Length: 318
Ligand code: 3HC
Image (tube, rainbow, N blue to C red; front, side, top):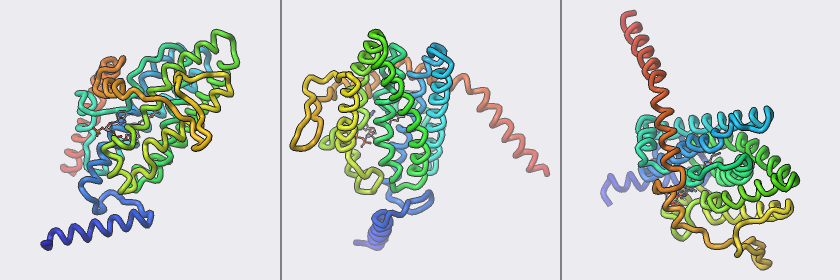
């Protein structure tokens, strides 16, 4: 081993010891390049998911059934924009630029959560997104609040607090509609039937095929595996939905006494890849909406940078 290699090995050992002691890695600290790249990948995809995640529900703001529901939905969608901001900032601390990340999203190169490429067909979709989709997001993000990278873990603490409100408002609606008129019950059941499988896909690939998990687990970005979190989510949700008289669109779903798990059927990973690669029901629409929003914001970016330039020139003269 030459000097350069042994220096790297020593730095890596110190880095891994810090993680083992539960210390946070902060911007500017030494970190392996692979750790930095994995974090940029995951945090930027997460940021894009928050921003694109505003669209399916945002479409219902003008059609909310009453003022209370409209105010809740407005607050929720606005929260998602804030989550995107915290996350883009967290990725910027690792050297990624906002322009690169946004460009990757708008040109269709970047991934974002599969689940936001499905349409919201009825008002009950907002209820089910709140309970199931935000519930799945919280399960994953509560783990990520323990992540070894300081800025990401701190962003997660705040995001989880807000997601808790998102999930509760969705659950409240599902409970209400499940006990409502036959039309309301049918509407909420139909929404569950459409969102159940895409929600289970949100947890990522099965452990045996998840290419990123080993690195993320080794360096404490994740502390629990995709399958573990998915199973815990299913175990929590199934009895609660059954108790409301609602069913799940999975003929193979059954309780296994030995493991204490609700065993679910085969997830359609072909559908998952179709959606993630841009061929889901709403991918084109979602990216078109983001591109339009980016274009509409151009004058603001230009005004801000012109002002900054002017200030700089002014300071130079002074
Ligand atoms: N949707 C889209 N792509 C996905 C995916 C999903 N549900 N699950 C996995 N993938 C992609 C991965 O990004 C990876 O692609 P890449 O290597 O080209 O980057 C590939 O499929 C292989 O998957 P892995 O299982 O190896 O990936 P990970 O180990 O990174 O696990 C993950 C995927 C669980 C999504 C993980 O990245 C993660 O925990 N991310 C942070 C949380 C997050 O992004 N959540 C998204 C939802 S946010 C949300 O719902 C907010 C709402 O309130 C608006």
